[in-house]
Structures are given as structure tokens and as C-alpha cells.
Amino acid sequence: KRKHVTLTLNQKLEIIKMLEREHYHESINIGSSTTYDIKKQKDRLRVFVAKIFVAKHTEVRQSLIRPKMAQLDVALFKWFSAKHSEVKPITGPVLIEKAKRFHSEMNISESCVFRGWWRNFKYWHGICKLGISGEQKSADHVATEEYSTVFEQLVEEHGLSASQIVCRTLLWLLVVKGLLMASKANVSGTHKLKLFVVGKCKKPRAFKIRMSLPVIYEAQGNAWMMAEILKDCFFNYFVPVVKENFRKGGVYWRIVKAVLLLDNCEAHPPASELVSGNIFATYLPENVTSLIQPMDQGMIQNFKCFYRGSFVRKLVNSDSSVSEVQFDFNLKDSVYVAALAWKDVKRATVRKCWRKLWPSIMFCDDSSYEEEFCGFHVRCKRIGDIQEMIENVPEKNAIAKLTENEIEQCLDMDKDEPVVESLSDAAIIESVIKPQKPQEEEEEVTERAKYTWREATDFISKSVEFAESCSQYNAAEVMNLRGIKVIQNNKKSQSSKQADLR
Image (cartoon, rainbow, N blue to C red; front, side, top):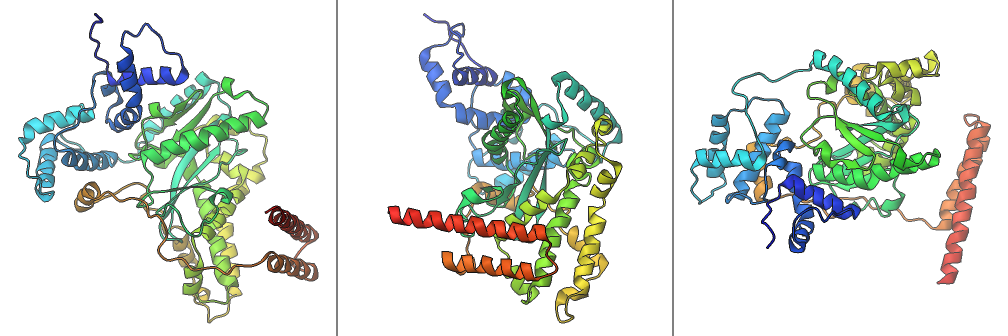
């Protein structure tokens, strides 16, 4: 008879990895039925482990048994995670009182001996120790200097180059009703990945053909970044794109490593969950993000300047009122403008953003000082461009009254917007009792006019004729428009052939 073996969660995850790689060893002394059960539970295991507070707890814990009052457990852990991410001290008595309050407000009939329940709560979530006193931490300059050294050691240990290190950050745009965007680029600036957009609606009517979008789009009820969304993005988009980039560069991706650098926040899963072969993720330490997070060193500001500049240009060139332009500016317009703004961020700007985290990379650069210098004055130049546009606007247009300070406020209007869940006690309880799902379709969408192939071709032809007769267009720009006309004619021809085949 086989000896009874009790596996920890960590061991079960290792078995799942072996099964997926087809490298399962008979030396693991468990029966085939146990192996089947573990494989069947792999999704539950991974989700459960991703939510464990301390990853080391998986080396001890053996089962997925949940507490009797599951809703109270979920609500309290949400509150605890939010406070911990804000680096606020939480004591045992404080958490017990919060549990009692949630128990009362959620109208849970089941009685609870809170001290015993609290002990089990810590075990379920792998919470090892709580600080009794302390203050909320601010940016740590000492930790910043220490991590710069650690980061250089990481680069040296794995033999990483500037093209193999990618940084990602989150930004919130308020031009459209709540839209979260994540930008990613490598150190050298040679590879800027598509923007990753999180919206509230699962199937926006504005996106009739999502395959043609210039961004990657996902949905979440409140347009917040969640651990599940990030994992999906990592495995189904980031990893394949990085491998393809290596292949195009003539490098066999299996022998090359790549790292994704993330800021430390509660919306992200453990780094151990973001590994695919030689491609892995690492986190910046707490309290250093504002000081050395590369994307926050000028890149995001430049992106927002380009984005808002495009929107202001649309307001200036429109004969409609500001409110009408805002109403017509839908989700599709927003993502296309954002994609163009991301494309306009210069390679030099991307490179220069790493000067604090990885100073030595600046000395390995062959770019000119002027190029780098210009990259970091986009904001000032863009404000000047916006002011120049406004000067030519008729006085009856409300935008003509904007001052320089108001333009500055417009560029920074969403600077402090949260990109992850920030819920009140009432909102936490509601999210547990009535989980919010992404909307299937947008409620209010302005129907756009539909044009035939002939009408669309006529529009483009007129645009080409206008450009040829206008001194504001140079020869290269006219050629670009003529190129669009050629593409339109080819697409029209292909459409006719497909119609004949039917």
C-alpha cells in the first residue's frame, strides 16, 4: 500500500508545471487519481495562491479550504489589502473591530468568536506579522539608491541589454468616461508595445471590429487594473510580442532573457506568477516608485501632452460647441488619438527616463545631446503650441478664453486619479455581495453615418485635391495622401471581388 503523502500548495504548483511541460517524474510518490485532481484544480490553485499575502506561506499550507463566512473573509481581506498597499499600520485589534463592523453591516446571521476567527484569518491569507505602531511611509531616498545598485546587479546577472528590459506603468485618462491605459517600452526606446487599455464596457459599440484596433482592449466593471487582467496581458500579449521582437532581430528567443519592470501595487500578482520561460517580471520596492519609476520621469507627461494637444486641436478646428465635440468624442476616437500620441513619444525621451534607475545606460548611448534635450521639453513646447492654436480661435468659442494656468491644469487633471480599486467600507460590502461585471454594451452611443465605398473614395479624392492646391501641405504630405487613395482603391477592388464570389 502506498504511503499517504500530503502535498503543500507549492508542491502542487510544481506538479502542475511539470504536467504542462510534460516533464512529470515518477519519483513523486502520488497516485494517478491525486495527479488528476491536482490538474483539475490548477486554475483554482493559481487564483488562490495569487491572493496569498506572503508567498512563502504556500510552502506550509496544504489545502484550499475556505472559511465558513466566506463573504466576511473576502470583504475584510479587500480592506486589509487596500490599507497595506497605502503602507498604513494595521494592528490585530483594529482588524478585529473592522471584522465586527462588517459582520454587522452585512447582516450575517452566523455567530462568530472573533479572536479565534482572526487567528484563522491570518493563517488563510498567510499574514505573518502586523506592525503595532508606525506612520505611513513616504518616498525613501536611501531605498532608491540601494535599489539602483540591486537593479544593475540583476542586469549583470542575467546578461540583459537595453532592448531586453521593458517598463510598464498605468495612467488614467478622463477625456472619455473613465479609461485606464498601460504603456510599455524597452530601455533603448526601439520597441514601444501597443497601449493596453482597460474600459468599463466589454463590447463597446464603437468597436465594431476589435481586431483592427491600435491598442489591446480589456474590460473591468470600474476600469481598474486587476491581477487577473495583468496576468492575461502578460501571457497572451507581452510574452508573444517580445518573442516576435527577438525573432525579427534575428535572435533565438529561447536563449535570450527579458524582464518586465512593474511598480509595486495591490493590483499586481506575485512576481512568481509572471514567468514564461526566460521572460519574467520584477517589482520596484515600495516607496521608491515616485523617485525612480522610469515612466514617471517625463514619458507619461509627454504622452499626455500629445494626447490632450490632439483633443484641443479637434476643439479648435471644429465649428461645433465644446460640449458637442465632447459628446461626439467616443471611446474609439480616444484610443486612436492615444495610439498616435504614444507613437509621437520620441525614442530619446524613453531612453532618458532611465537615467535615475540605471545611470550607466546613459553613457552607452550614441545619440546627440540635442536630441535628448528636445525630448524632455515636449511639455513646454506643447503648451506653447496649444496657446498658439487658441490665439487663432474666434472669441465666441469658449476655448479662446483658456489661460496658460488652465492649460497646465488640463494637462494634469488626472494626475492623482487612482488606477486600482480604492473603495469605502460600503463599496467593499457591495462589491462582495453584488460583484460588478463589465457592461456587455455601452448604454449611450451616438450612431455614426454609414458611407458606401464610392462615397468614401470621393472624400479621399477631394482631400488629395485640396492638399495639392493648398500651400500648407508639402510634397511628402501630398504623397502620403495619395498613398491612402491607392490603398482605398485596392480595398474597394478586393471588396468587389469578395462580393462576386458570394
